[in-house]
Structure formats: structure tokens, C-alpha cells
Image (cartoon, rainbow, N blue to C red):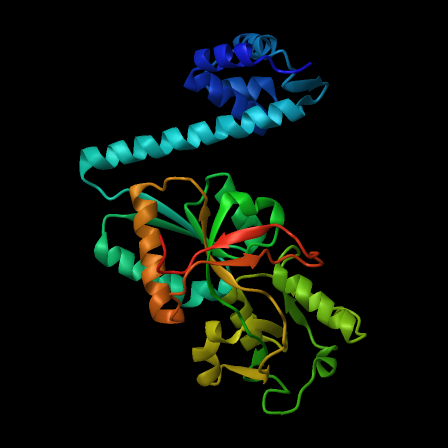
Length: 345
């Protein structure tokens, strides 16, 4: 049964913040009792409210099962918008509190590994000089989960890659640079002083791989397949540069890293570069924000600091250009994304 536009407007006008929160908690908890507790309601009141909303909208929002509830397609749509409303209200409360107290608010940033080594520290240092009272949260991950959190409003800005053409319409991308990945070992490794090393020579050593789902992991697997090699039998999975460098210095493991991220350790002899550039085409990373979304004061300050630091580090100030989305196997005519230069607003 379709949604009646008049009923939809009426029910939306009657929804209060606690009721909107209930919809979000029902989706997260998948249990009416726990969702009701989370918003300070009784279970009968929560069940009654859900039935009323479904009756007004003339759609079923959640399917009831013995083990709990599951959102329907209609429910997922309403929950997505309800979550956005809650996040926007939280941002409004934070900005009002900031205005009242004279503090500088909060900003959240997600980043992939390479810019975490230079761009992000430089931008945060600049940001804290300008706004010492600003609380900055930084999350390190690979691009896909960072993009999901950005789209859901959990992060203000990310420095990552856009891999999925489906999200292009919702995002604004400011390109920064590409990456070259080197094969590194600890300075004590048996092959540390040797030259002319190939990937084939390293098959019997332990390898440190990024977690599944990362672009680098996909490219590494592809590299082994192209060379007719089996994946290493001895694999450690982590994306933490600190963990990787400690493992390299204490074992005979091999890792693939962006060299700039660990150059001080290689120059001091703690790490050794066996292969300078594997030729992995990871794609361009850049500053990504949600298109049409107005950032909080803290988020805007963070974005300005990232742009200023990028001008110094990457010397990028190009005008806006149209680039295709980076997607493996994409055909001609794939969706295109508006790409801004660092100096553009």
C-alpha cells in the first residue's frame, strides 16, 4: 500500500523528538523493550506509538518476529531520515551551547593512512592554533567505512577515496594526490641489505596485510594473482601503522606501506625498503564532504585548516574539473562527480 501524502504530512507534524528517537532505537536495538528503555518509554507505549505511526502512514515499518523486529524497506527510509533529524538537532544543541559558553565546539575527521602521516597532523596543528578550545576527534580507517560514517553524519569531513559511483551525488570531492606504496621490512631482516628483490622472493615470509575491504588489500591480492603467486600462508591483518612498524622491527615480516608515512624510520635504519614502488594503482585521495550539508562552526574551521595544510603539502590549487568516479570495471558513461580544487569553495 502506498504512502498517502496527506497522512504523511500529518504524522510528521505530530512526531516529537522522543518519537523520532524511538524509530532510530527500534532499528538499532531490533527489540521493542530495549528501544523503549533507551527513550524512557514503557514497552506498551512504544508498541502503541509504532502502530499509530504505521496506521497514519499506511505502511508497515517493522516486521515482528519471535526474536525481535526488522525494518521493512519503508522503515529503513523513515529511520534514515529520523537519524538525520537527530544528528542535526544534536549539532544545533552543540552550536547553541558553544554560542552560550564561548567555547569553540567540536569537529570530527576521518582519514585513510597516508594523509594521517602529514596532512592531518599539520591541519590539526593549524586548527588548534586558530581555535585552541575546539575539540577535534580523528578516526583512522579505510575509505568505505569512512564514507558510510560521513554520509550518516557521524563525521564532518573525511580524507579518503570515493570508490562507489552510487554515492557520488551526495558528495563533494577535492583531490589531493596519489600514493606510491613500497615493500618494507625491519632493519634486522635477512634481506634488508639486498638489492633487486622481487615480490616472488618474499613469498615464504610473513606478510602484514590491511583488513579485507580496503583498497590496498584488493590491489595486493590482485598483484599476487597477476604474478601467478598464491597469497602468503602466513598473514597478519592490521591497518595500524604503529603496530606494523613494531612488527617489522621485531620479526621477519614484510609489509606494504606508503613510504612517506614511515620515511623517518627508514632513513634512521629501523626499516629497510626492499621495493621502492609496487606500481599499485590505488587512486586519488582527497577531502570529502556531504554535498548541500551545512557544516557546524567547528566543521567549517576543520575544513579550512585541511585546505590550508593541503596547499602547503601537496601544492594543489587547481580549479574544479570533472573526473569519473574511481570504480573497478566501470564502463564508459559512468556517473561523474563534481571535483573541486583546494582553493574553491
